[in-house]
Length: 494
Image (cartoon, rainbow, N blue to C red; front, side, top):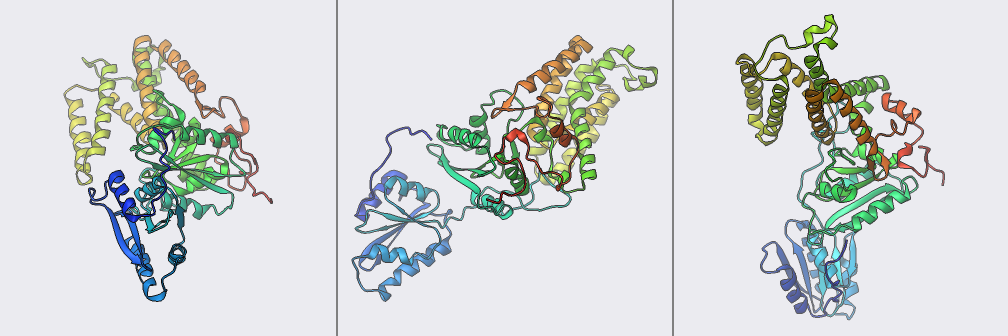
């Protein structure tokens, strides 16, 4: 992280009064109600506890305070009070801090700082207890069978859920602070002897180069700095809220990014086909998992191409065989079909936004109103022909069957562009749009990785694994797209 000014290397004053004055001036001690200081006498010296209410575990703080105060009854006055206090800090995470800048950062991160009169060092005790929910199954990645825990907004809990699944001594979590004001905790996770070193260095360099006040949007802001996506609608990283999915990608050689306050973990690098995977495929037998995968592929294909293809046949009825003439509109309408499709798509977008913004108890009523009343009445008054509603609904179901929300939105945008081209140039417009679409995807690089791999460039074995869900014992090779140091999935003997 770039600095916006000279680094504060002010040492910790030996006078507690000077420390308190600095804290009042620097972080608003005495002005902000949640910032506090507790002063006690230990073996004749003043000891100050600095903390932030709401971020500390009160029970730990009281326990440490009690232990230090009782030193007055157990010990005699000594010149070595600093080390006596250090030995009485009964906590597994205690660090010595030597500058006021570190002291301020640690306090605002939720640690308690213990300042001892006459000493130029202070103790940082990690008694953080961040507010948040307990691990629960993610709403967007549910499975019929499988674990019901998922990532939450607490980065410490998220790394713990990953450690629970990978107990390898080579698993690494590098912690960084990003944001000049927010100082958001960001962790880079990888398996040391598997992940590509160049990829780790690139991600570390990009994160360290972020110069911004704060990351209030957490992982999404990190993504925009990391991959420099611009106005490309297609997602260049994958998000997951499932700890088992994150652990699987770590073992494959991917590098993950954990961001504090976000329940999603960023997986890098990713391809187009990574966004079509779902944990449910791997919670069923290989045959059932392959069937689920093919159904999902069909749904994604329908979400992209069903409406443009149907519009071609509507505009060019001569292309339809006699036996398939029924798929065209059987009723005349004063409103052009292309406008009906766009109105329907706009209505579905309204419905999606309304579902997000509507309180849960009212969501069912809202759905009934939109689907039954508005939809049926729109057909009865002649605003839509029934076929438009049918094909738009099937296309929408394909959109909802796409595992990645970001990919479904990107596909929806592409579908609208294809509809415009088809309405203007008919079949020629579809061919032009498809060609431009494939060329566009083939030109994308996600952290230097081809976006359409293993289709472009073509890798037969990897592409076969995309089409058919292989069994776990049969998956012995890590995907080459991540350029792992160790291609074999078996653990190294070293």
